[in-house]
Image 1 (cartoon, helix red, strand yellow):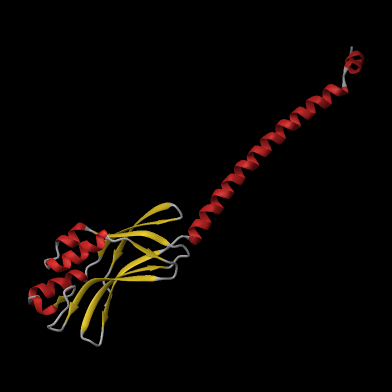
Image 2 (image 1 turned 60 degrees about the vertical axis):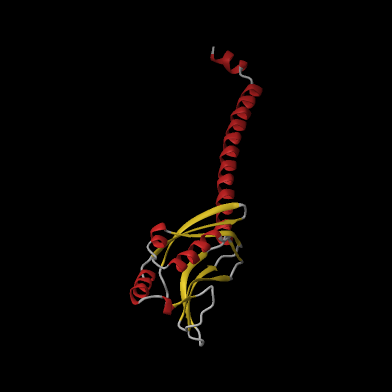
Length: 186
């Protein structure tokens, strides 16, 4: 009986079965390799975007010029490699509502409706609060003389608190949203 089984054994059947098992194993290995490649491509794309996207910094800065003008600017800086477009800045509602000076509220609300574009390595300065020490001030500026002592004190106290700012911008066809805590720099 054993002799008969060995004689009926077909080498071609054995090689065909072995080839089929090998083909299935290669298909599984190829599928796993391709899915790993997809993960690597996605990670490379994420790293490229991370390296090339705009990085914005929004803060308030103080400048005092020789003409006795003290201006506070909203400074938007782009430290990244990409151009940030359609930048919109909005301050938390309680910040704007608690400012008692109407002209300053108007200036801040006007900032909400503007959009900006900042190139890589560049910055934009926008007048945030323009306070002039001289009696003759321009129409777009607020004179310190117009404030009473309580208003001046309240304004400076309020500007010294951290301010929550929402920043929306676009880059490379995508929209980004960031929340920053801004501290007033003297």
